Amino acid sequence: MTLSRGHAADALDAPSGGGTIPWLGIIAITVLIFLADNSLRAPVDYRATTAGVMEAVQLIGEGNAKRQLAYTGMALFGVLALVWHPRWTLRIRGPLAWAILAFLSWCFLSFVWSSEHSLTIRRLVVLAFVCTGALGLLRQFRREHIVLLIMFATLSFVIVGFVNEIVLGTFTPFAAGYRFCGTLHPVEQGLNSAMLVMSAVCLLTREKEYRRVYIACIAIGLISLFLTRSRTGAAAMLGALFVYWMLVAYRFRMRTMTIVLLSGGVLLLVLLLMANDVIPVPWDVLLMGRGTKNAASLTGRIPLWELLFRFGMERPVFGYGYNSFMSPGNAMRVAAVIAFGLNSAHSIYLDTFLGLGVVGVVLFIPVLITAQIRGLRVFGIHRDPALAFFTVLIVFEMLGGLLDSTLLFPGPRLLTFVVLGYLAFRDTTEENVAVDSVPVEESARYAAAWAGAGAARRVSGAAMARARR
Image 1 (cartoon, rainbow, N blue to C red):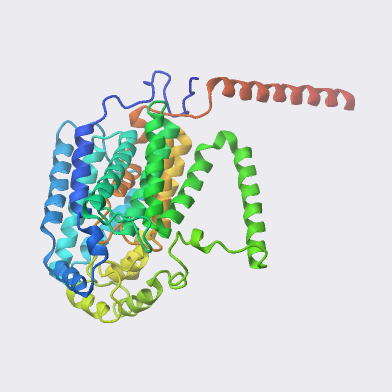
Image 2: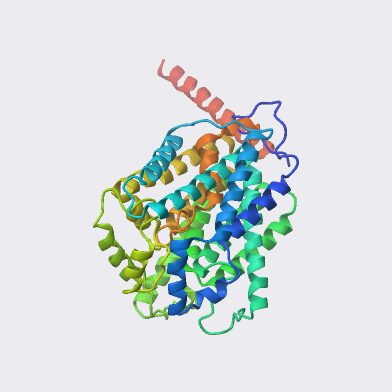
């Protein structure tokens, strides 16, 4: 079944597809991200005691040589990709690009008033290196290659994580309180697994080959997500996938709305029955097997937020400097009250407030909003599921950011930065690919039906005019 092209494509455009897949670049970036964000000690560190907390405070002050090496590698990769036969041009394309530049400028300017200059300069160097790596990728990768990179990287982290836990003897999925870490904190692994599912769903709906591979990736991601018991990742993924379905299933708009309305009605009925104690509330399922003990406080986040907000109000306008609030001194002050998440506030918005003040939050939120607007706009032109995925990835980050900070803290997420950069600085028509999910024969039927209806209206109008005369 052939596919018709979106109206941005030329009649002589090449068919969809990106030619040779840049596997060397994909593997290199995956290795660098692994070195920067993952640790084989993650399952052990997750169960760390007070001594582990003190070690974490020490690492904040001294830094991590492995991470520094990885970020340096990202920068070198980016520079090489920028100058070595670049395939695609980059330039400012609308409000999103200006929003990103304004936010990044404020991040670097925060060094002037930082409370911990040595920590701020380290974090800003990491930010600059990640941005350089992202720009290099954007000069070389097609959009489908970016989706493939995200799927390959997240799948690699999950598989290595399973192997790591088996080797360490910490893989005990049937034990009470077990949460799958792999090589990340369970919350981060949950977000990683959710990104694996979403990217595999995108490729499954976009490509005709390797469908079984994509289905297997979806299954692995769902299993991993369930084992992490991460409610943040699960909720953000469900919200993002709902938006993705609404975008790519535009051929089945009425069917989609019917499913949504029926599902909403069933859910409302179930909630009413639960509220009236007609049927029991399946809390164990809804809370992913983690019980109700800490659910009211969002697993300790609310007390942490209250504490950190008081710190933030000491410097509300400019903050403590980009990603610099959790200095060794402030980390000890927080740990003295609540030893929970010394590297972040577990909310991207609160972390931005702490580091960059109210001004930083006002500059950051438009980045997420304009990215979604830009994504919707270019998807409307090309009808490419990859562009729909880029849009819902920002939705995912926006939802997940309510309870997690890993987009920016402790280090920026390169994969999302690449997507933001694509939407902000790449010309989507330059790739000469416009994937439209409406089959040619179906489009022809719609056109014929519309033309027939128009002819009928014209005949009816002429008959009425004669009758009046």
